[in-house]
Image 1 (cartoon, rainbow, N blue to C red):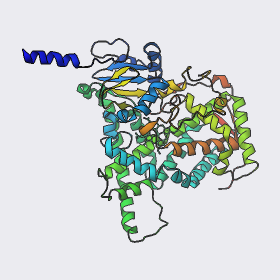
Image 2 (image 1 turned 45 degrees about the horizontal axis):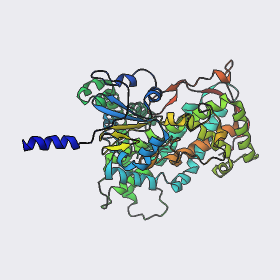
Image 3 (image 1 turned 90 degrees about the vertical axis):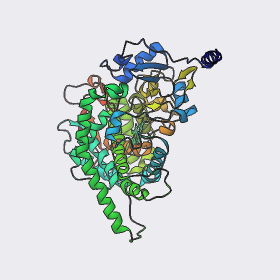
Image 4 (image 1 turned 60 degrees about the vertical axis):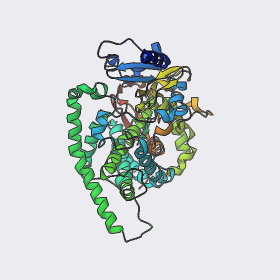
Length: 490
Ligand code: HEM
């Protein structure tokens, strides 16, 4: 009898969870149908949040998904309670694409901390990003040369060429240059990273993992192409390091693969790094650092072609700063304030990662009065935050001037504007990416005028999105370049 009383008491003291509101669930699938309705997930979740509020709970199979759609709630997750939300859930696709989640984006705990520290200090720091300026100059230059051969002739799909530039810059930083079979490597990477963007069936119903056959096949195909190439890169670096061991040359330049291989010998590391860690991080650099920058440049050019007055203003600023100087370099970017506003406004309306990478709640906690159960997955809708009418006037319109004299920035302190996330899990490649975006856009706009193909008016340029790891334009932008400002020789 005593025991019965005791049990009764303990259930009485169990705090009742005040779960966030959410749509009604269907048997077995819960709210899954909302995510596979065909509508883009960031838009579908935004529409649902209008009815259910900025902290919303979706029951997706065997897991709970909390969707965050307000500045205050985002600040709670990424600042006030950042430590409790800084783990990533284990996603089935990431296990396959990232050597068992041993990369930066999907690992957790001390292993993740040390890997992130090495990459931030050695590759993604301001100093390192600056040191890559000649690589950016040469890669952008070769794109301009290619574009000039189409001057006033036929339309070009800009994104494909920009993507080549972004990939070559990352390849230089990650492993010192291009690799053999670079085309096949990049194609396989692209196919694979598209799979890691969103939850798949195994993540939602672990017991139905056999239904993920298509995804598994694609990832296996990617592994068969990518792994031997990465293995070759690692072995070449190892051999080079053995040869250099006794050279003691202060001027030897190290790339990320070199630095990670060196770190493998560091006895002070909490968790050992392996060759697979090196490979997984190289994959991270490509999956995180190429499509994001390409997409931002493509959306910026799309908005500019649709807003000829903004295009004229930004080109006038750049051409004035260049002032007949043929050799426009990165130091000239400092004065391009309006260009920076254009980029900010592009990132507000078109964050390349509209739903930030998922987090997982470590311990049950309270968030704006709601209980978030331990283990729940949390997704922040950065796209919806950037268009929240409570934070932005004329939220859906492209008005770079809105940032003039404003302290609102994307560096992780303004939670209505988080294209790079915020807090412990924010993007470590922000400076790296911004450096490419700024210089590429400045020079595309300095040297060329841009025209739509015959018969297309600015208002007809469509803005349809294609959801994936990165949300890019569904129909790639096609423009005719017209050379206006001579290209330098180098
Ligand atoms: C326009 C350029 C870029 C954008 C908009 C962007 C955006 C993002 C976002 C939204 C996240 C997730 C943040 C979160 O969950 O709170 C992220 C994470 C990450 N990004 Fe970027 N990124 C960009 C460029 C880059 C570049 C150039 C690199 C590397 C070369 C990079 C590497 C990473 C990595 C490794 C992570 C995972 C961080 C972690 O989980 O600790 N990104 N990025």
